[in-house]
Length: 491
Image (cartoon, rainbow, N blue to C red; front, top):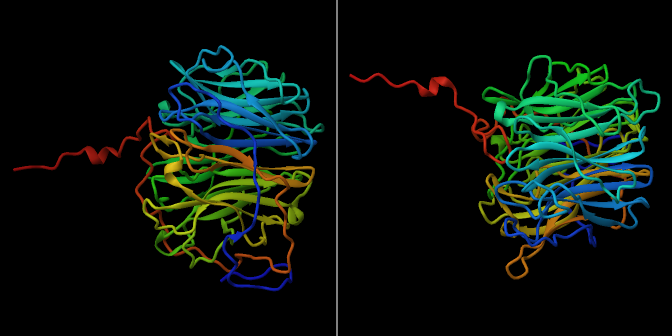
């Protein structure tokens, strides 16, 4: 049962995916012509805002074996107008770079050094974590190497932008190394991303993927991450109280149970995480614990003020638990000027109206908002619908819109950034990065929805076997338990 919150009128069945007439704003398009890519495609956007500027970075011209080029889109007037371009100096297709592809673009702003930074993976004979720097979010320099060893994957970046923090101006990059069983690595810069310290591990050499570093006002860095642990995955978090000198062992937030998304769509339980003005960290991921027989995914939320003690995952009440809707690939935004019970959250996500859709699945995008730190949520609003899966580029691990998407607040207004596919044009696909021309409205109506009375299904578990690869591109298989290799005795 879904109850009301904040004394407002209730409805135990929130309306599902309200159709809203929205004209989306396309931020960029794939103009490359290299033969290695599937054109015209753009996937997997991140975004970050500071002041009146919001910047997104994403893959352009997805290559089926991994990576693309890196594009960016920037608004300096709080989302009213946008300009776009490509990062130079990484790939051979743009600015005389030396790498064959790039991937996993993530944006940060360093207030202490007044500069924007995009972290990405540079793919070639060797793979590097690199950063591209800009004073104005329009003109970007050639890449600076963060790590040149191992085979890094799923990097993320954040900077300490609190002037009163003892580590103001520290920037942190996280990644994992699937060639070394997904060992977690961190590197710190104190000079605006010009130079980076040696890679460091957690105190227990933990394994994980998809870490999202966030910085509290006191300078403590908290990193929610999907921890790879034996036959089960856990949502977990580790931290650093000393400016990146040391990193704790992860604490478990919750075991993860998820439904296998239909249609060979590439999805995972990677966390989407953000932080509010008081330093509370919110983590969201796709999870089926509230659905009988793990029939579809909800999006669940856990929060922590210290990175150690986390709330039990609560179901975000987008649809009734009796619905057929499958929800996945969340992009959480938190207004950095709000906190606690007044924290404003907006969550964009992809969905199938029918979870058990085989290969005839229809992909859509929706969003919900919370004005009270995730206690209650608005009814969902549909931003796009009807995307056929054969409109998407292929990868080793399935058809792709994103491993992650993003929502950012700029001057109190939320903007989601996401990939939308339209019918192909001739021999070319037709997928690009979009946002909305106006902010995503909070929709403070008389009805808000809460999942306070929802309880997980007893003994809930995933409807698929354990994770089979350390990386999202499926290049590094996880060895099965040694017991699986034992030969049976024969007479």
